[in-house]
Image 1 (cartoon, rainbow, N blue to C red):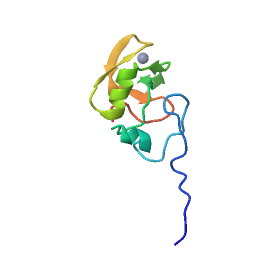
Image 2: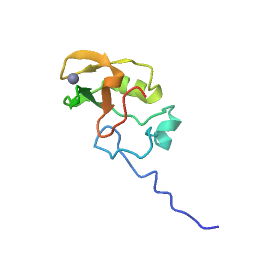
Image 3: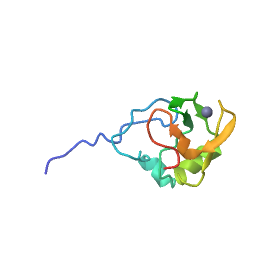
Image 4: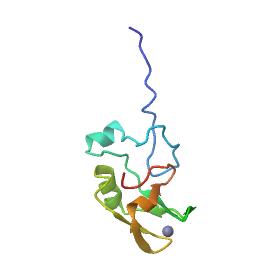
Length: 103
Ligand SMILES: [Zn+2]
């Protein structure tokens, strides 16, 4: 039996730096995050996409970011700090990836 080095758990700091889009359709939480009940990595930076253009990054309040990590579909409206209006969560992507918010 060969020993394999698992590099898929490389350290990532969700929400703080741009991370490379993952090959998977949905980004997985780290083990520590999963242990806290998260089904997605904790991320707090979202980008509103309107008519193919990206608004400046919006930083979500901590409680909202926490909620999205636990229950990605629980909120259906997100406020864009650039537009100063609420929009459907599906109009946003997580900063640094192509993952749609709320999926
Ligand atoms: Zn916007």
